[in-house]
Length: 307
Image (cartoon, rainbow, N blue to C red; front, side, top):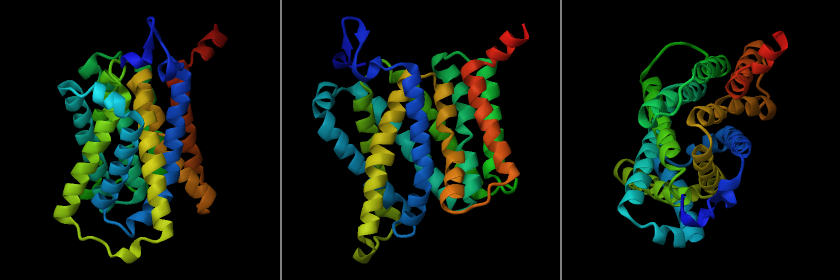
């Protein structure tokens, strides 16, 4: 962690927050992303995929640079560049594959297959950084995945869109494991800036090579407002908080909490789009809830009661 975040051997500022604070912050991020499905769906009707990503992440990078220019200058070295840009490449691959996969599968299956990163992260972190892998973490991850499946899946068939989405989930898991490994010892704000910049530039290049520019008429006040929401809150704020949270919470727990994005998207569909709340959805929500309880408590309160 950067010297400005430390003092006399004790963390101060954001680093002084308790793990519970960061867990709640990760849940808030997941809920924000779940709500953003509505915004993304409408925005993708007007803008091509990589242009949208280029605008989102370049705007977020400029905001981060304005806020943390001194830190970026202090830590302008090969290590920060390599790790920060590497995080950006992983994030770009994750978002790109997820969005391309959405074009060849249903929104529910896209959400479910993306959520499989909650199972992958504990194993990747174990091999990458030796993070402890317990039966409770693994059991909670698979229980959560089953819950997401009940919430999001309509069928079990696998197509090209599903394969692309699953590949995107692998990139999401790798990015989270990298943040968990390096975020605690490096300035996460600087790493996040380089990550945003890399995603923005790669998306801009991909857009110029593969996409036609939309006409100026698509830039309505509603679209500009949607892009501002996606760039500022769903990208700059949410991903910065995600990276900070993963630097202070074990990646196995952090990824489990972030996977609430998928069921929260369905929940907001029930609340705002009048989708039917079926028994299958309720069972899925229950499994996800119990997976988090298992991860956090290991059901120790049941053992104490029985003894």
